[in-house]
Length: 378
Image (cartoon, rainbow, N blue to C red; front, top):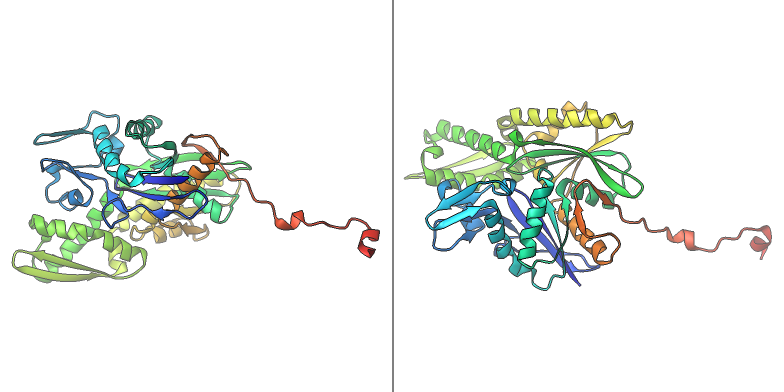
């Protein structure tokens, strides 16, 4: 039985696929790339989905449909030329593009951001059903991240999962019980979405360029787009506490700049402080549960410059801070697909709680053990 998991947020969609009981492999949804940007180019005769759209989203935003995931169920519409896309139609086009990679799959679980409403998740499920995708369930992304970490190392305290995409940052308070992992509360912070962090970095790089060569890449649409396309590499360097090299090109000029981790953190210091205050509010509320608290950052949140340090300072340097692996939500969703296929748990939408896997019995408990002195003597 072939199973799959699709992890969707406002920025991109990625997935895992594999046989039941085996380690899943990444789905290459955009050529040789494992992730597919959630953007659609409306400028041609036919829709172009993925990097072709993301590559011009800053230079020509009027011909790109992006940021539609949070608009599901609304009257928002993207128009250009002959194309008219609602958020639902945009999602349909994206999932249809992805469906070719899911041939032979008999069970699929979706991972969706926690800020989506139940109705929006049902819309995603309905669109997938119309495309004949074998969706068996969906799970809150923060809940999936917590579930993945609990599988690696069981924890019995309250955990705060911090996640981010272009639309918003979310802080989700989780607590494992005897049989399930429950979501106690969630805070959505649209004013701290990843898009704003990118803008701060872009502004810092542009100002450095002006100081070095008196050229502002924001004055040239091509140079601005070229700089924007390198911000993912800058964020990755920030996550690894390494300098980031940025190459800028305009009409008859070239410039190479190096940003230190300290400069990247300084550019986003105000956002990091605001985010840390939001996490601290969730932390103080979680402490009222009379148990210890740990903070878990998804890979996307951990890439934000200065965020980890700001949270650590805000929470009095005492709270454990754990960075989750990049595909943690997808791994949890794939495991969920296996459990559903084995009928251990019912298919459905797991937004507020998810059953924990049964703990395996210790093999030593199965060994015979003498109970009398006579048995020992023998």
